[in-house]
Image (tube, rainbow, N blue to C red; front, side, top):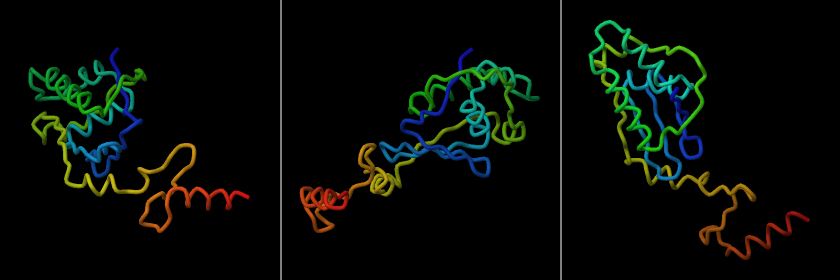
Length: 157
């Protein structure tokens, strides 16, 4: 069975009010999904196999004949944007919001936005280093990198 997981090495995801927002921490680009896309995405990142999701989608009243290819295109878009990576099938059945499926005419969308890119990348959390944490090494704080390192050494003593 084919399963995926959120690409946690670079993506942060939040689902609020049935809308998924995924932020790429490396590029500052973020992605939004419609209600039906969010419902499918939630199943994907929960480890439900694509085959189980496809089976659930085919069982929704009014599902179009090409629902599997629509699902495939949605999964391909998520992979192309590096939102998801290979994962482990949890063996669970899919839990799809049928009202979202019909409200969105069985369309799963993922839209890309870059309007907050500068703000997201300017956040100091992006300057956190695994070995040292957040260390302000900018001339704007009044100390050179060398002076900052010297001050840190003195603090450690």
